[in-house]
Length: 278
Image: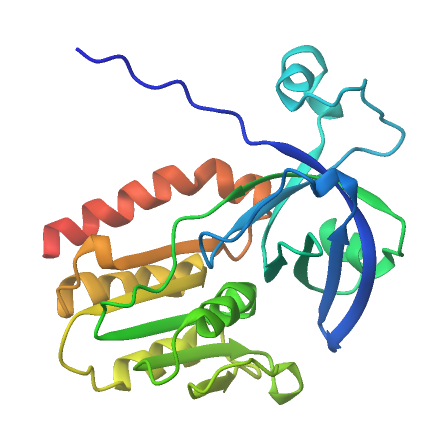
């Protein structure tokens, strides 16, 4: 039996805040650069993501920073808190990485950090990871998500060649949260208002008349609506797994720590339920 390859720990990088910008009332952009990103690269996938590391107040770590050593030797309550964010864009010339944060006032950890970040501030990140990019040989593309998936959807739209057949649906709280994206594709902005998150997306994708040919789909956001769209695509439209990038970035009622801990079980249950009805 062949030996299982050793899983490599994600690389750690020290990013320095170059500039920030409030791009919509609830979306704040932070650009990281500096020498600490000398070995960083995010030019393979359009859903590249990193884990931001936020140490508890008053906690510092020995240098050189080693996340595996910290987790092995430091009490768990002193571990850095991780929050996952997509790379909106990466410039290999200036070596600057752009991240967009959804801001909910003072709630959470990453949003308040981003809102208060100033040039010169530093933050450690792990990664990047990633697995999706639009394929040129697909006949058409479906991109669907809420505001948490907007950075990856925007990056994917900007990576598609002119004239590609794409249906893009983005659900946001209201018209003030729409963004300009450098694409010739039409983006259907769905305004949530007071409706449950994902309801407008489900209605829009269900109403879509699917074009002929091979579909490649990217569907991400709140786990509840993602589950329903997964069922629709896998069972009703028989889209092969290999042509789907579909996962819950977050789940109502859970912070990232709780959601990441329960996500494998959730995904297994979803797969089992949908296999029974396939």
